[in-house]
Length: 375
Image (cartoon, rainbow, N blue to C red; front, side, top):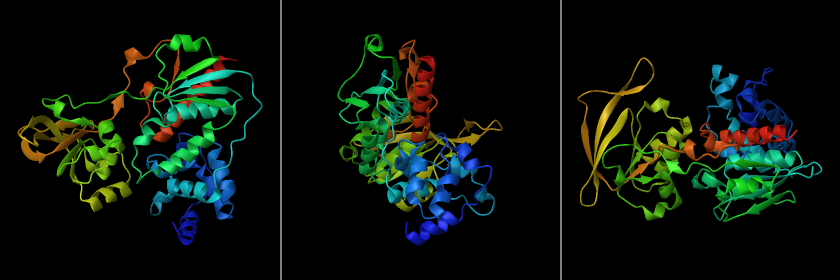
């Protein structure tokens, strides 16, 4: 964004007295306040205001969907919403990420197991309240599922810088390549333990032939391993978007609902169109058949019922062939029966998060609950 473009976008903010954008942010960041600082030229103050509430401020600015602050923006009634996430990312880039300001230690130590955005949110809140934190991660790097977001959407150097700011201090001890399975023994060593183990099980289509699919995690972890002339992506959310935009081949997205129901921003729709991705909206795959080198898909058309659900239309079956790779990008879940009793959980273990900002918020709220229980 050029300086002129930035000033123009900042000027579009109406400085609403009721701050609906702030109320819509899962972290309570105030676009009203940081834009006001930015309008006066104080990008450093703008960055500080954002980073006080958001431990991954530039990351969220780059990947946040429009369903939060932008959806609440009053400017939409005139023309279109202020590009708040973009402005947030610009403020951190131009104003620099301020160092963490931490209170005196309170002598208590917490364990956070899992370093995805929910775990990092928990770390953020705990150290802001004087705790020492041991952060356990079974992989060799911190970040969890955020690491799967393609470089084109989230440069790894941005994420690395923000995680380093949060964890490279005298309050946080990081334990990489450390998988915790005996939670009770860990619990005995700490004042409190927060579990943020992510979503280990990808959701599946539940149809005949789905063994010929790969999960979005498999694909995004090593996209160069999976090459084909034609790729099918099952799903219409951000994960499916990442798969479609990462693929080098001809891509078709199969979406159960309408295109306008997809939980992605308009500019991402534009990116898909520019790349030539075919979006087969209101279409479900009902069967997959493997031939020599490709797969044939049996599909059925859907319609939206008066209750707002996607329901199959009778006698609308089609057969589509030539797909070299089929990616299931329907999200994941954590089995409730595997959640140990008596622990505070965050993120995907709660079944209530779908975006980075929601996961951060979940971790922060889990930490607040842990702190309250210790009083």
